[in-house]
Image (tube, rainbow, N blue to C red; front, side):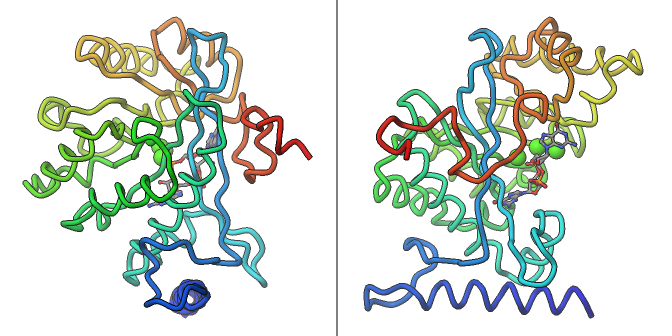
Length: 276
Ligand code: C2E
Ligand code: CA
Ligand code: CA
Ligand code: CA
């Protein structure tokens, strides 16, 4: 079926990438950066409200330029990658790409990278991340890892240790799609999160249903009291931007500001020397 075909194709892309490592040592898709050809990382800027909405960082979002099907968004292949045991290799490749890219951005900017539950369950996950940071030379505080709450509900003490070790070195941790799944306040207490990303589904309620504002207001107030930053996702209009700012969201992300775009089109982080 179509899903299996896609899975095999993705496996092939990843295998080819791993084999393309030219340094003669054992191909290691996790710590080396293979050329995955048809895979590409897009970036969507994230804007700080108190700074006149200047871009403060960007989120890495993977794309697959498929030879027959065109540009595929992650919804069509991340689940396939997770099912096929390919997500760890894919995820580490995205991490490495993102850290390499962010090294050339302004010094106080950050890059956010999505992490699948299966990656987080790797006992050596923190060390693998530190290796990537070391090899790319990116300061740990400039990397933000976006986890979903499903990564945390297993109440796995290994995950706790991994996150503690990452935060100990200054890596930022954010909780993605907050409010959609098993939102649980005890996660916020136990895991010492740096940031919450408020899901687009709440943002899109603003101006249509009164509960949108009430829910976002409550999340922001709680976060503030805990010293946690809040990014609103899926901001599409000026009205939403102003409403979210008034509610106290610290950062905003969405089509209103920018669509995900290839690195070469990320004008706001371009350094003078690569403006060719
Ligand atoms: P996400 O982490 O919630 O990422 C935000 C998604 O919302 C992106 O979809 C982005 O393009 C889209 N978006 C941003 N602003 C707006 C807006 O104003 N309006 C609307 N309608 N949509 C907006 P995308 O790129 O298709 O990614 C979908 C999901 O795939 C992501 O959701 C994330 O969970 C997952 N994903 C993407 N890249 C990776 C990756 O490298 N690893 C893993 N594990 N998951 C990834
Ligand atoms: Ca995300
Ligand atoms: Ca999200
Ligand atoms: Ca979302």
